[in-house]
Length: 66
Image 1 (tube, rainbow, N blue to C red):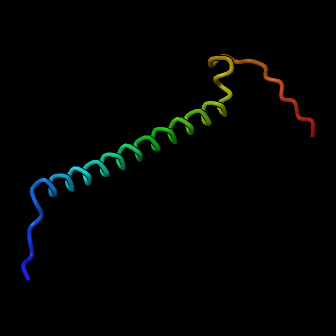
Image 2: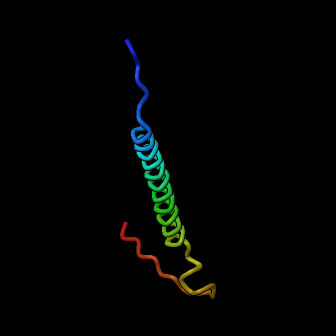
Image 3: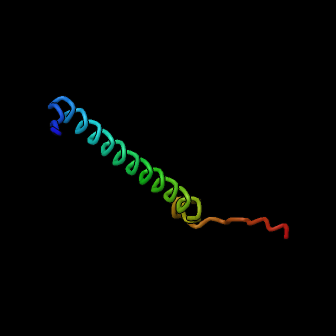
């Protein structure tokens, strides 16, 4: 029973597929991190009442129907 080695083309194709999977994984993680950071940044910005008057003292009326 003889075992044969895979051809160079098959080895290169397998390496290329593995590199492509890694690139897709890294890109996906980076996209998720950027999206999460942007979401968090907008949430913090919305909660910052000092941004309403650009740092100046302003009167803010809060409507609380409850």
